[in-house]
Each structure stands twice: as C-alpha cells, then as structure tokens.
Length: 215
Image 1: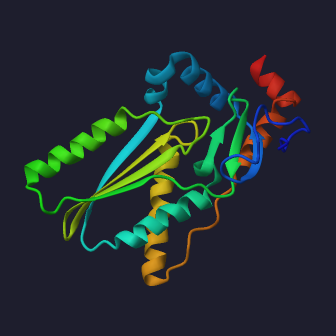
Image 2: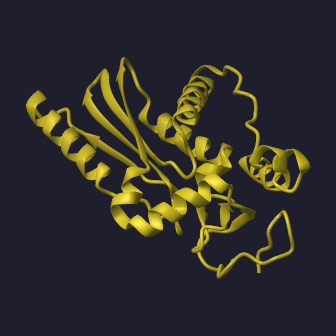
C-alpha cells in the first residue's frame, strides 16, 4: 500500500499494482480539495468549467516529431502533469511516467474553410470532453498542420494541476525544450517539485503563523 509523504496513513482505496507505476502520493492542497469537491458535486458541467485551454499559431518550419517528444519531456519534468487524485480527493497520485494524448492531423489537403471547420470542431469537442480526475491524465495536446509552414497547437489542462500563470511557464519550458533539441541550447533549470509545495502547505497549517492568518 502506498503511503503519504506527510504521515504513515495509506492512500484511500488505491492499489499500486494497477495502472501506471506510482512515484509518490502526497496530500492534496486545500484549493485542490475545493476544486475536486466542486467537480464531484457539480458533475460534468463543473468538471468542464475547470478546463484551461490555449491555442497557438506556429508559422515557419516545425519538426513535429521533436515537438511531440518535447510534450512528453514536459510531462516528465513537471510531476503535477503526470498525476491524478484519489477518489476522495484527499491525495494527489504522482506517476513515474504517464502517456498523455497527443492528437496530430494533417489538414493541408483541405480548403481554408474546411480547415477552420475541422479545427473548430475539435476545439468544440475538446471543450465538451471532461478529464477523468481520478485516473488521469489531466492534460492533452493537439497539433493541426494547415500548410507546410503553418500549424495550430492546442493545450488543454485541468485546473487541479495548473493555473493560468503556470500554463505560461509550461509554454516557455516547451519552447526551450524544442530549441534545445534542435540547436543544443541549455535546458531551463529543473522545476521545483509540486509535491514539496503540497507537503509544506499542509505542514504550515499546523503552525502558529497559519492560525494567526485564519483567526
């Protein structure tokens, strides 16, 4: 049975021999518990409300295979991107590795109007597709080739593991990974582990300083 990093209590109803190999289990933060409860009570509509999406237009040469490798590297680098949650929302399950969806479609044979229709159709379906917050993954990627030098790249991630500010950091890291693979530039500094922040947040709640804040 997997144990929490902050105590010796086993994670609730989680079998480590099923699914992806688990790296660690940590307590969920208070904000994560609130979001999880909202998704649970509000069901699909509430879950979908926490989807964060961003689309980027790429102009110029793009090595699709390298970009796909970089998304996998990004997930491996940031442990929150390869996580899910226990069925009571009390623990964050971080996996050693997790394969995330990467959709690629070549639309170069279609007219501009047809391309727009296909992309809009995907974005609509994506907006209506909820994440499985218990089993994961909680992030997905899509890439559409519109011309030899034109692509549209979309990222969707659940707010349980990412906010708008963090999404900007992920895009910056992805750009640096891509440039590093193509030109050998240095990788960005290793990110702090989210699990460290989660544990420190829980421990802080037992301090006098925290009690002064909430009183």
